[in-house]
Image (tube, rainbow, N blue to C red; front, side):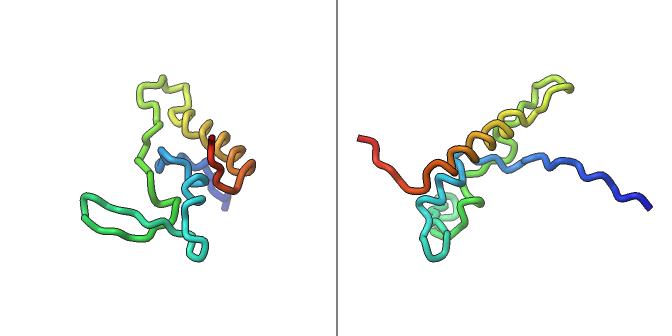
Length: 94
């Protein structure tokens, strides 16, 4: 029996604020953020990977079939990976 080929994952949860940046505001002990949900009128703790996300936010639905509809999300991922390794602390711009 042949193993099924694994397809590369297609990102669906696109962060409009990078998770590496949000991690800088997380509680050191738990790694969570305090999130205010206005619609539910509640405050809760969540991991940075779970917030500031919109499904298929950067997906290019009008792109021709031969083009990667997730090119923006893939490129942002590359940039965010580079940036997250450069700095680990908050800095104040003066």
